[in-house]
Amino acid sequence: MQVALLVGYLADTRERRALFVGVVLLGEVPCLLTYWVTQYWQLLLLRCLTGISIGGTLSLPFPTAHVHLFPPPVSNRLFDHCSIIALKCRTECDCRWG
Image 1 (cartoon, rainbow, N blue to C red):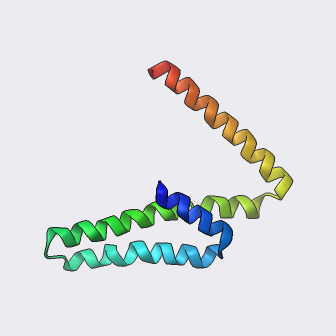
Image 2: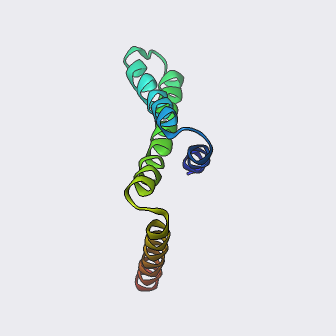
């Protein structure tokens, strides 16, 4: 979760395409290197790097598509409505399963 927040902040301040390539490489290279692992700590380290990359990669395509598909006035209202719906669903689920 913390990685997604960091990558989201960087996506707002840096070029998203370069950031996306960097985050994907951060995950794919360790995933490929797991083939040559001989110790448990090596596997743990490489899988942690892959997990960090997955957390960062999930936060990049949605804001990018959001900005390019909808103009700013529509995107702001759409985001507000989706946030309200998500909050309402979350509240109802919490009340039911308690």
